[in-house]
Amino acid sequence: MLPFEYLVWAAIAIVIAAMICAYDGTRDVFHPLMFLGPMLGFIYGWMPLKLNTTHGLEGFFHPDQLSFVQTMNVLGILALVMGCLSCGTRVLPSLPEPPLSASLNRRLLVGGTLLGLVGLAAWSFSIIEVGGFSEAFGKPYSGGWDDSGYVRDAALLMFPAFLMILYAGIRSGLRPIHLLLIAPFLLPWMVQAFFTARRGPTFMISVLVGMSWYLYRCRRPAIITMVLGGVAIGYFILLLVVNRQSIYLGSDFSFTTDVSGMVEKPDTGNEFIYGTGSLLSAEQRGTFFWGRRYAAQLMVRPIPRAVWPNKYADFGVPELEHNAGTGEGFADALGWNGADGSAPGLIADLWLEFRWLSLPVMWLIGRFYGTVWHKMRSQGGVWKAQYVIISALSIYLVMQTIEAVLFRVIELSVPIWLFWGFARGSRARWELWPVPPEEFAEAEYFEPEVVECLK
Image 1: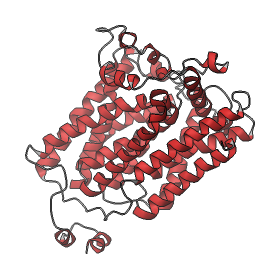
Image 2: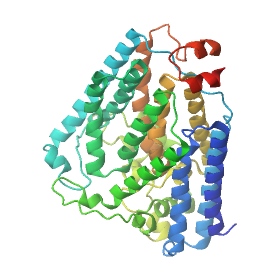
Image 3: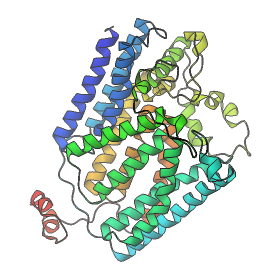
């Protein structure tokens, strides 16, 4: 087995090579590997490299344990990259979409507004339940809460509402009414993301706003803009996390700009240390879930506890009550306990579920992202909104667990497909109108550079 340091550099090399290959073939800065790659490189490359340099891993693992786990990480990254690239990298330029009809525009606006109002009502109710705005955000890492999971999750509906209204606005001509409809559905989550210093909502808002703005206008930012924007978002997220205890209403907001502790601090809540511990604990105990956790998320989670109080225990996965089942057996297998509330990252989470079968599952995840990207490029419309959703949720996928992203994908995607189908009409096709490229090129609403691509 190769030394740990070599395997860390191998993970970084695979990520860099995959990103170069994806961009060189597609010239699309929104290719899945352009945002999945940096996150994979961070958690499985840069983070273990810094921890190893400062000898932060020596108190937790033996060298052979680190080599074994990093081998799995390298194979997992390779499987996801191959799955994503298996869809091909040479594609035709995206065809611009025809302008929206008045009826389609109106239906998207109405559908988005209805979704947003439901989400806003749920968010407001969760704030009221904890005593109001000052109580919700008057202490670190807090926010609203409601005992009903349906109320808590319904607040997410403001995200698909934003995507639908923005699409209608950009495709028919952005006007003040669109901004007035968008603001009440976006601002609550911006407040939530900042005052709770949570990585997921912060990343989601950044991707939803930035990516949808470009995709809906059939444009792409320059590669340097993408790189600088990605670095800025990443730094801001780390800045929020390291200053989490200083961000709340009434705080003096005494920030530190040094975010190195987020990467180099060797504690049991560190993503790489916790993920490595989860994988080793499962391997040493020979205990794997074989899909039961994911099945529970799909079939058991929607049932209210008032109806089924002990639902996870009765289903056979009581472990889900603690760190989504990823924190079991640390003390017996490793001699230390993982921190409460921690997440192991994608590869360790899949290993706990499927062991060696996690590698083909990683390939399928990459294939899924690649397929939706192709649909977005070739068919547009609702596929653009779908691609923005899975891109925005990618931080949960890579940095946390499948459970963290599974129900969010369903909750954000299903309403968009339903409302988009209603807006299109029962006989409408999901894809772009079947207009020949030469007719596209003659249309007056296309940019000159796009016309040249289509000739």
